[in-house]
Image (tube, rainbow, N blue to C red; front, side, top):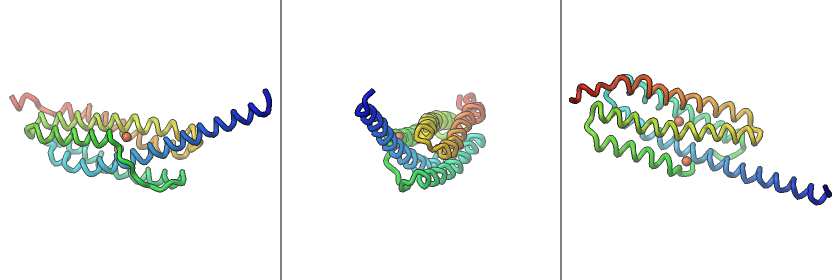
Length: 177
Ligand code: FE
Ligand code: FE
């Protein structure tokens, strides 16, 4: 292999790392915006929920969302980027869907089921995002960041599980018949 080819290869691979970093920073700003948007939407969801277990699950998510926002601020600091959000069209759509469900259903078991469905879509979006961000962090050599984001990933998975296990099982559909 000639020296010239070797230099070219190294350059290409560092360019790729540079553009992966760009995508990575964009993804961090996207989830930062998404968590803040969710934080503003959760109080209405808590207010609309009627079972204690669903209210509790949403309140836990509200508290965790604030912690996840702080964690992201720590991450921005580690990677040397300004903590600022970039609109996440997906989360914007998901919170609009949650709002629409609450506006078009009668308060009670059906609206509760709708809130759970909307929240689970939100959790799945966040699970995918944090999973990708953990993997990008490792690729870019930010192992400490991967660890921090893994904590948020673990919380999102547990929240999804709590919606399935507790909240949904507690809804009494017979009561509406
Ligand atoms: Fe979150
Ligand atoms: Fe997004």
